[in-house]
Image (tube, rainbow, N blue to C red):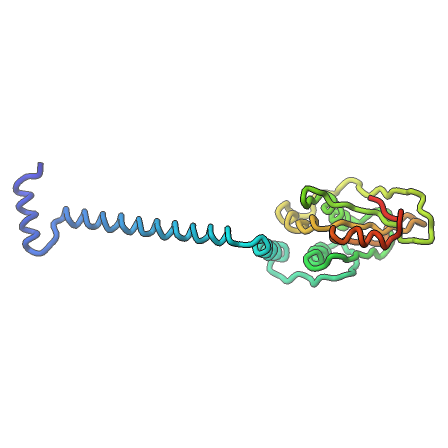
Length: 223
């Protein structure tokens, strides 16, 4: 029990217009607790707001935000090269960004090779590989080989495309961002059947693939 002397002291202090020490401590503790509860409610409100925004965000909006973030990571804040319907292959990071940029806006574009080759150069091969591996609605992409010499019979030669894949060109995170659009595309390797060499790599959207393959002629393409 509290002593009578202590109780008298508290009463005297109260009469003098000052809150007893014990009362002040209780009030201070109560104020801190109330502030804590208010802060907790604010945090909960913020979490609810963020959650609501995430729930209400459309897939298209979410994809747009993701793409903007990916662009910043891949270019270090620099602008992407403009999309191009036809551009030349080169062994550089800028070439990869050109393919990536073109995939953002175009459904059909062509990569030309300065000299016909027997197998795709490294960076073009990496794109074709990721197109074949990428899944959309549980279906993988396809890489076709099409004869572009319409006057020469095709002898059923199947172009052997995939060889050993070189080591990773980028760190895993950047590689994922770079090749992520591949899931919407197929690839067409354009080969001259007279010399069996690759002349171009054409990248087309999955929706337009059948229509575009028809232009090569019946029996001219195979996957």
